[in-house]
Length: 505
Image (spheres, rainbow, N blue to C red):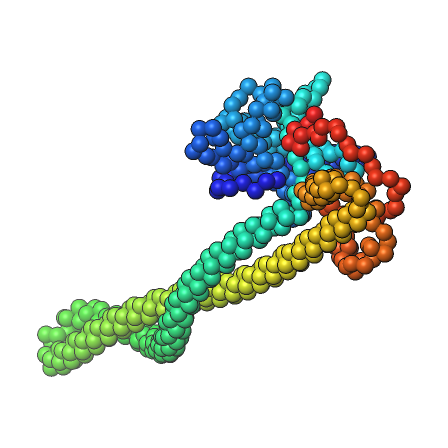
């Protein structure tokens, strides 16, 4: 792929499910990333270039690409009967890719991408087809001829991916650090608030406990006071009972006196006839009656006094009973308040425990985030190491290719000393063409290997050590054969036209 000057604008970059089909292999499905980049130009002749790139997020060395200029599009337009112009072709291509993405989860998708290759594995050019499936046949809507990326293109792609990954990681790391700092400040502020709230709750708890103790003391005093009043009421009830007994005795005595007064009145009636006869006896009787009346008045006064005392005792009893009910009501109110205080204190303790649990969970999340950042840094270091190894290997391959070209040119010049000067120039040009073809067309490595067979064994072993012809990761060097078998005669030059690397024949 030629390096295009100018800045490319990426207009599509999504992961699409692609069916991969190789020779003598079963068809499989893979999640590949398709990128479409467009370079617009101000020139009225060349309006722009289009780059289609196929990569795999799992395998960073997987790279297929296709560069389509406006001239290439005209050939593609004629071959595949496209009715659009070059300016509308990218939109049509993106529309096809979006259709494949939207139906990739369906059991019977209508549009599907197919990546096919004639080789046993994806090592050479491949065709990317947009297939429209129906019940009776499959139709190719569009076919693009993609070629694999060279070592230089893969390294450039890896370097660009690594740069993008590093910038993204740095940005993510910066965002995470800002977020962690803000979260840490918020947690510190919240922790200070919680500590202050905890201190306030502790002080409130102490105050509640002191108030609870005071209320318990008051309750105990009230209970003692209540017991004292109960004893007082019991003694008053006993005194009232004795007063009732005395009152009944006084009433019985008064009844007896009244009956006696009645008897005396009857006796006075019966003896009224004898009063006139016996005045002295009458006066004596009158005096006795007066004295008895005086005693009756005293008894009535005593009865009145006893009645007043009984009423006063009833009043005192009622007063003590009212005070007892009042103290009982106060005791019940204090008990209810104490229970409410205990419930509130338990709720506050539960809230404090939940806050402490949330704080521990937040600290755990912070530790996990730090571990994730550490693992990301390790991945970045590993990718940088792989990039440096790829650069060293590429430089080694370039040195080996240059040394082989010099050996081949010297050998050809040494074997043809009798030819005229124009033929020597033609041989040099042929060797230079072979060298260019070896560098830019890896698929013609067989022809290059056949030209290298003419080098004698002592010449091949006189240069670099054979270890430089092998790669540690078992990836073949493009343009160099695995071995240089001897041959009888040089192969004939192929004069057939070279097929297009962009479009299928």
